[in-house]
Length: 269
Length: 347
View 1 (cartoon, rainbow over the protein chains, first blue to last red):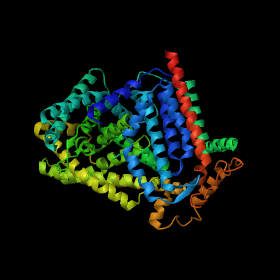
View 2 (view 1 turned 135 degrees about the vertical axis):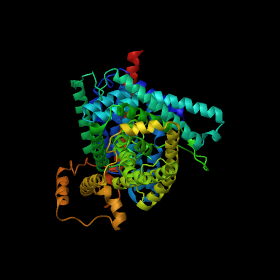
View 3 (view 1 turned 135 degrees about the horizontal axis):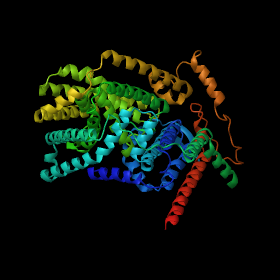
View 4 (view 1 turned 45 degrees about the vertical axis):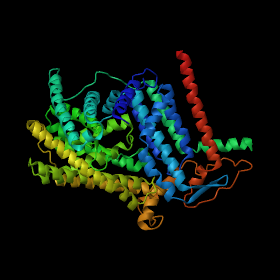
């Protein structure tokens, strides 16, 4: 991804999170907890499990459709970050060649199964994480973390980071444009120019932090960023969590997918 | 390199999360007691700086490929270990949320790999002794390269260990190490050059800035070796506990790596202690162990029984595939249904 694309991507994810749907209106804490439970459940399947993972696509699909998040946008982001998991996973079919099943006469090796399992888990976990931010907004997640007991100092770091991310990225973008326009490609992009660019960016950042600090002092800053919003878990949030937990529990512990397959095969047999 | 959720097992993921939360809590407690208010916005904005700086690429000399700053080491040098750890943690959290780099479960691992080592291990034990408080650019260069290399080697090796202990990958330890360590050696050298370059540049241009940051950072910034060792001991105990639990309840997870180490599939069975109790408990609590739909009249074929992995063939039978296809079809239909319903509601 080029710099501009990355920048606009963050902006787009951010804008999506300010929509007004019933997924967006759920309490951020409920969504954070539900997402974490979902991730742990998906990851807890053994390495050869493929079939039982299928029902879990319901969770991201529901969030995506009810939350009106574009499918293609999420899919594209999942593909962009996939190389590491694929790179590590692709060794499985090469190293684990033992046949573990024969399906309609075609032998299936353990390696391909575990590779497929990694890919499915990857898609599920990454899309769930992206959908959390796309339906909750970053400040929402921060407030949720704070109420869930994360250290206030860390949460205020996240707030600052988020607020100045866009400012500093624009600054970096201008610097890159200036460099690229003067260098006609590679000669100007060497390590020497890079070090100075980053050095300048750092100096400007420190100066900016100083100004921010004085501005905050004059507004009564005392080392903490309190939130005025007092939210509490509503019935809808509790219902959402209960539904998620029972969904995860049922599909984690009962082999329902296979059962459906057998019943249908029985019908057509 | 970021660890990914899909390669993790819950035991490894939560253990590393626990370690990260413990270190983060310790760092923020330490900071809160000693920090100057001025540091809070500075830390936050420097997080955004690292983020922006990581997006500026440069050409690596002699190769033509491009690299970017990692950031953990430079933060530790500028801010001291406690503040740097929190800033690195916030940078990685934003990366996990906005770019899905890694994932939320793997975030604990990533903060550990990229934050703990440079801040709490390399900075006090390598960087500080090597520079000895000197402002000589040459010494800073040597110290930065050594620190960045060691920090990245630790980080890369942790990725290897976390993946292997999770048991989702088939890569043998040796090959994996050969795959990861040399490339991170190269990255570390470049990272060290860049880090030293930036620090020396800033010192040359505006020396007072580094001094003022150093003045406002906590006094006891260099933590004692004893504390580092204590933390390690505690974490080793936690890890050991969690892993032995995992090994006894989910044999498939560790089986492979154990096989590599011991040369056969399983550890000598434990007759005493907690393992048999847990095994018994697991057998009792397993949901419907003999759960089976009545086989349809003419089951297409008999699966080949593979005694090593008792659980697998059930999930990979034709019935399983049929079921998965139906379930996925239903999910797609639900999704499309909601979407068209919503679209109509709006139009």
